[in-house]
Image: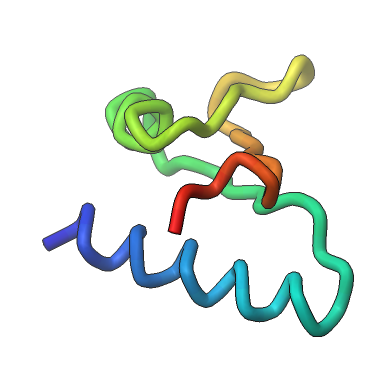
Length: 62
């Protein structure tokens, strides 16, 4: 279920990006397990904080 929700969110982010020029999705994981979940979908940890993860819009696969 969580994976389906994340995929839905990322597809919506693509729509928003087309309208606004959004270039990056930024998430803050609750814990290391949540960060690991996001990493499975291509998110990269921020150099400042391992629980803050980033995904470039261009790297989202529809």
